Length: 374
Image 1 (cartoon, rainbow, N blue to C red):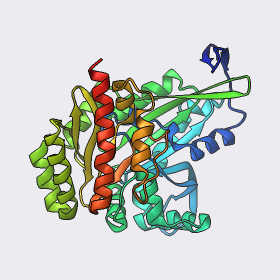
Image 2 (cartoon, rainbow, N blue to C red; image 1 turned 45 degrees about the vertical axis):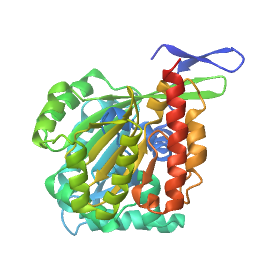
Image 3 (tube, rainbow, N blue to C red; image 1 turned 180 degrees about the vertical axis):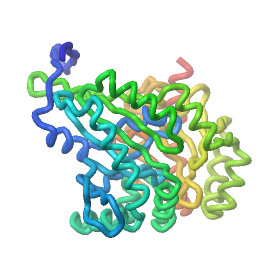
Image 4 (tube, rainbow, N blue to C red; image 1 turned 90 degrees about the horizontal axis):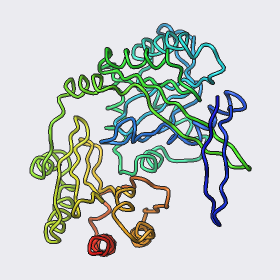
């Protein structure tokens, strides 16, 4: 282990941060449980960044029906499409990270799809919510930024389990070359299951810690095979609206208002691709500040791409100013760290919220126009 990174603090002080080991595997696991974004969703799926709902740490897995648990996976997450994601965490000092952990994970996966009914996962999630004193429906909404029909969401989890559509992720502070090759091979061969490795580098210096994640396993061949297998269809404005009208007619009315507003302001649409998620990007010149997206019968929302806005604006406070207006909508509370905040379309049905929304969009458009004119 060698090398370091440099941090320039306010005042111009340069702080050298050296790569450091995690104190223990438990500390490493706790970090991941506390900060699921360390699994970089934008690297796992750049087109539709993954979001993670932690179901449990040390989730038990039986080897046969009606038997007690034989194994336990370090973390079980679900993403916004209800895809179960099994995560095993190992430090690079653990020799099992090279080969043994692969067989272990495949054992887990083979038994999960057979012996983990959706009801087991849902019950565990609701048990965790009860312990925290939180509402399951509210937690789903807080995590995924959308108004979610719980029954439809859990139905998707069930369908994914039955189809073997799961994700396996190996996490370590250093991914050895042997594991990287195995992960790439498995990800090219398995379908619809996905196998990835995430390396999380830990740097420390002067009481500051920095974590840098990187995903391995997304080879061009693997991505090509999986894209073909799910037959991703291109979406345009017409097909997006047709899909929404068929599945969520109330949301379709709001989406229609947004699209009409966008056309009046000379904005352009660009379709996205997705088997489970339909995405329609809304462009301001060459900048992609927002998009409409929908998950079948689950939800529809307008999402902001804050990094694209920051990159396209001269004003470093433009995102904060937009958030300041949108946060006047009841139930919306965006923070500067939100990368892809979403507004459920149902919230824009009321005239009051619609006027707040269009006020915020005017702030956004004026800020981007000022940047483009200089």
